[in-house]
Structure formats: structure tokens, C-alpha cells
Image (cartoon, rainbow, N blue to C red; front, top):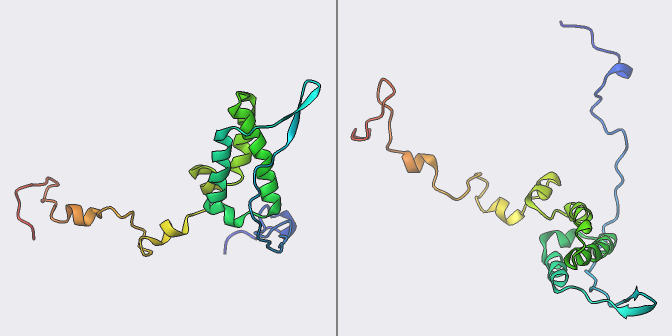
Length: 160
């Protein structure tokens, strides 16, 4: 029944990955400290000082739930990102776009985490798998409310 199926070489969708997935060996990595280093300022080298806000930002990433999944290369990329964060907090607003792109890759905002399909395990299990937000259900809140014939509600009507 129905039309003759297209030949396989003419189908737009084949439901398989065109490029095979590469499985990597997991390596646990510890977050590095923000390094001390010098930068060129004019003709001399001066000590670089991390803005306090960047130090707080770095600690936030170390303490984040995502951090337990970061490998060495992730921490190195995030360390380079800390330099961009420092530039922003020193007044270089041109760094904002690059910073946003980089932290999005790590799931910085709720929208980023949704795009990356990240969920918090604790929040996911709190409802016991019922899908409830924890607020009273509509049934428990409006359980006594009944529709009257003709579609009008009578607030004084007795419950069944």
C-alpha cells in the first residue's frame, strides 16, 4: 500500500550518524590555580593582578556541578577564558562576546545547560519521579470545585 519507497541513495534522512562517534578515555582533572605571571607594559614586564571579580568567577567554576566532568583540556580552555573575563572586568567591553561564547560551552546559564542537555540530578530526583514542582497540584487546590450543567460554576454548591 502507498507509494513505492525511494531508493536508499535518494533518501534525505537515513537515521544514522554520518560520522562515527569517538569514545575517549575519561581522565579526572583538578582545577588549576589562577597563575601568577608578568605582562608587558610599555618596555617593561609588570606583575599581572587578577581582578577580585575574576577570582570569584574562577571559584564559582571550581565549585560548579559541571566541574566534576572537566578534563585537563577543559580547565586549560577555561583558564584562557579567565583572562578574557579579567579583560572585561578591567573595562574592555569588547571581550564580552567572546566571554559569552566560551562560558556557554560549559553550561553557564539555564539556557546553555538546556541546550547542552544538562540537568541537575538532585532537582531531577526530588519529586520522586512524579514530575511535580513541589507546589500543590491543581486537583488538591481546586478539588472541590465542580462544573454545573450549562458550564457555569456555582461557588455555593455542595461538593459531591
